[in-house]
Image (cartoon, rainbow, N blue to C red):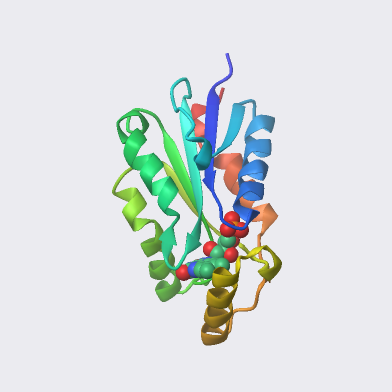
Length: 171
Ligand SMILES: Cc1cc2nc3c(=O)[nH]c(=O)nc-3n(C[C@H](O)[C@H](O)[C@H](O)COP(=O)(O)O)c2cc1C
């Protein structure tokens, strides 16, 4: 019987859901039964054999609604394999400082769940999809860090991660 995997995502501007969908597509190709849900739907985790949780970063943090979801579901999530992914735009380098900075994004999450696997993916910054406040903030960050807007998602990296995550749970 196929194993059921839930992918829960949190997004503000819509690009993290597309990452969740590609991960789901690859897992589906590996024989898992995959459901992809926005955290805003408050999905139930009952009945799933593993859960992947992913979030965009805003001002150094996972989105608050996904942190609430994890806290609420922590007892159940501690009983099954979990994996997490973070979509972000800064600190994408392979140097120690970048690694430490991006690992700090998910450090509070790793206090709530103990993921079997974790990935950091370069995300997307599309000013047209941001509200006024976010656009102002993004422009200020882009200026101070010299990081341009654009779509920096590396689909082959995302697909490779999805090819190996939960390898030992193979249906
Ligand atoms: C207002 C704002 C703040 C952000 N803060 C950070 C940040 O602190 N660190 C980072 O690496 N990326 C930051 N980002 C980039 C987003 O995490 C990235 O673009 C992500 O892919 C957006 O996902 P979404 O389209 O699902 O909302 C920020 C983006 C915006 C618009």
